[in-house]
Length: 332
Image (cartoon, rainbow, N blue to C red):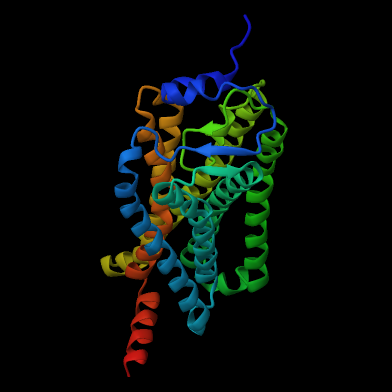
């Protein structure tokens, strides 16, 4: 049986007039058209208000974290180096897609250059992968700090932290490169309309008029490999951490030790739960409305960058004290 090109399946997701008016075949589009949130075009301005608020909070919060860690010598330790890497990753991910999304909502600026689309896709997916790796590095830091505290400073030296950071960056950058090369080589036909607010890989795959099984298998394998390995490592680390915590003699000691991990645990849940929900929706939520898929895809990328600095700012005493000192110094 001859397989129907996947690009044709996008037609039923688009308004009839839009689908019919873009039937000219082409293989190398110079631009793509991003629809924003299909079906909710009339509400784009209203939707932009919470999105813009979340983005501003993410930018200000993560820049504040970077500033405080840089200015406070007592925070120049592995835990806060990794937190700085997390803040940079959050800034890149949110800035890779949110300005373009807001321009669609506010100015109806829906066109995006083909190369810019691929670049946006690469930065979103590579830095999201890096963020997962950073969470693993932070779990390792907590494991050493609690399970082997006397050797923490000798195990996690500055050169070791730098090597871990480099490994995280290289893994994220290299794993996503095949997506970029494959997407550039694909022929695209019938439409250059992406029913999304940014160049998401799955949305782009559906426009290709070729056999995309290689890309689909690689995408699924990479997702399972990264998530499986990272979550397994975090789970093993926290299993050992909890064993040490529950072996402490007093309740106060157990609570105090657990509190040092609470911020990291919250950030892990903030990152992986929306990611798991988004993945399940893409694979099994075919009956859900398209606008709900797109909304969740935006929230999945925007929520962690907004919440991470809040979680660490509120729950980490050193950052909170440094922030209070900063404002107290300015007032005096």
